[in-house]
Image (cartoon, rainbow, N blue to C red; front, side, top):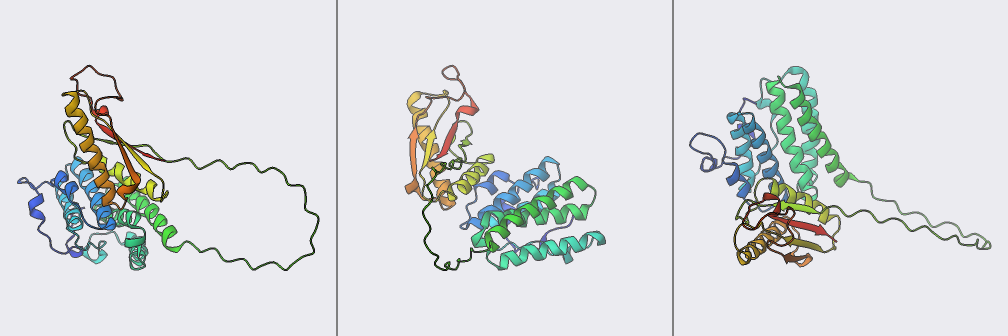
Length: 303
């Protein structure tokens, strides 16, 4: 991923989110709050790529994806990579990449940003990942992983955009009434299982939603949107470090942070009820005053 992603970005003041050693400030990126679901999905997916590149100590590529994440976080238009800007792509990879880009851009033109924002954001970030890995062309497993993630996300986009509408059946011709057969008792269909619960974890003495916690929020939002009217119950917790009263207040702040995060993704607070239990009901039993990361949590349950 050595080539800059310059051809696809509107210029942004991204330098403020890069540290003095030219490495991305991942926490600052995650704290950005773009106004649309598509921009939030783009920001999150590019931020995930930043983490992956940083873990490989590839700071140049981490900064490239950070620039895209920051642009999305600033509500600026971010387009899929333009293949003409990547002159080191192997010739035999171009037909598949061109077909993939056409697939993606066609869906975006057909309204994927509004109608399938999460999957469209995932697809765009994974397409860019595919392009960059293919240009490097020395990690076949990474190329295949990015391409597979792109294709899976696009299949989900297509299901949303182009699912065939059921055709109305013509009324059958009237027939001579026949004796009604004796009705057999119908077996009750088993209800579909409710997804979740989803557990959002917090840092010590914090109510900020960062890192993996935002990914949990996205999964909860997707599940909640399949149950458009069902209630959502939050149960907020703290560990036993600190006084009982302080922990009760802290768990309440964590619940409010989750409500705000759900609202950012379009989930109405009217659907949400909260129970703040402080340091009671720990997931892991500890002594009083002891820190435990698994106890600092908000549990999201769909009803």
